[in-house]
Image (tube, rainbow, N blue to C red):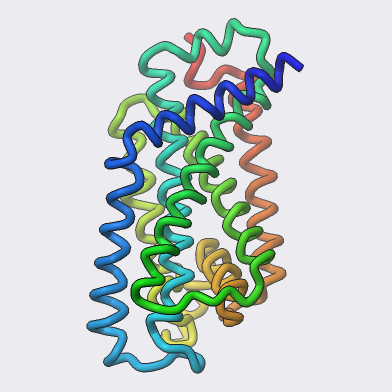
Length: 254
């Protein structure tokens, strides 16, 4: 019972941490999303026309929603856990009788909460620009949760390995953002030259975006079952890696 009290405490702390500063955590993605929809959807979308029978605005909505989930689930965990390390609050968790998997689950749950909440805000904003009719709600929700879990885990690992605040911005700026923009959010892979189509298939975010798009509007450029398999495999591997680093005390024990 005590471990679940610890889990609830960590999750509650994480939730109140980003809700308390909502002008920094929830408002910016709403403004950014409105600009995406206005510029890409309205101004440029009318010139592009349709993609696979869907209007350009309808096509990009799922990708923008999931891109927000990816960004904020990652950002929440990497900033929160590194701050815990930097302020030496991590020592309180280490000396307490709290299993490593509870610590990991608590922070990951906080990242999922923020990612899904931001995704919901973005979905509401999209309603002002395009009707949002979800074809397969169960699949869409499952993909969103799995994606948030994966990138929350990635943020946790980044926070463990980071030695300065600069280190927690390298991955988002130079890896996460390029992969997200090149993950089929704003275009279909079929629109690319053959060589770039093959290169794009090596981007894991492409599969997640397309699986979520399939759940929302029923269109995908890739095999959806492969997307689930890939996402589940990454979650499994990153979970084992994160638990292994916690057990060794990598980056948190001196």
